[in-house]
Length: 288
Image 1 (cartoon, rainbow, N blue to C red):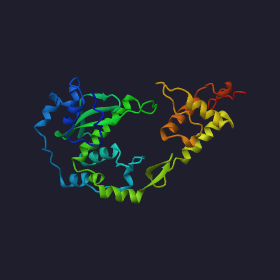
Image 2: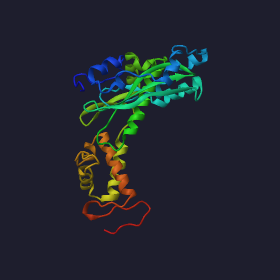
Image 3: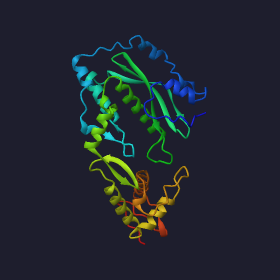
């Protein structure tokens, strides 16, 4: 069973030991990689990758601070998107000269962890360059993230972890550098009575204004009734969006779900409050 006292956080160095403590023996595939025949063929070339001066320069090139992103929460962890690492590998070695080989199939840890774990081996120009587990947390009740999206997220996470050991983007893991980046590029703002990090100049105001316009188009001036109806309706898994009566009270996730519902209503004729049908974009108007 999962040990609730040992939550999975960050980049765990000895994944085998950590998972062995927390997971029953009925999930051996993520406790110990099997290193099947296709991967074993590359193990003899582990640590044998030879790089030119130009390739080494590309891999260890200093970060462009503009490309760094920050997670919009109270911690404000900084990171680089997966395509940054993929582009850097393509530039150094060429397209098709590196690959991620999956280790078996993805596994899912049940709540409270609710994680998808997927192991990957990195092969560059026929040389074995490492193994890590990538992870992606599931978001319950979200239309935005499917199980397939979580698997892809775990793959992206594995790529960034593997590239770290190639000397790529070490500044992200330097506390002093990270603090200096936040001071220059980010700021804390009060969001729903919590101080949250975000890049300077980014705001959710425009998102809320767009939602208000959509609500007016469907519900007229009865915006509050429209929000209550949309946010109290049940999602596919039976959970609620929030039951809020104001856009300003909604979290980022709730705003996204509301926007998704409004989009579906504008694309198809759906019954709304008072028995009025929403207009289908480009279609004929329904008389009230």
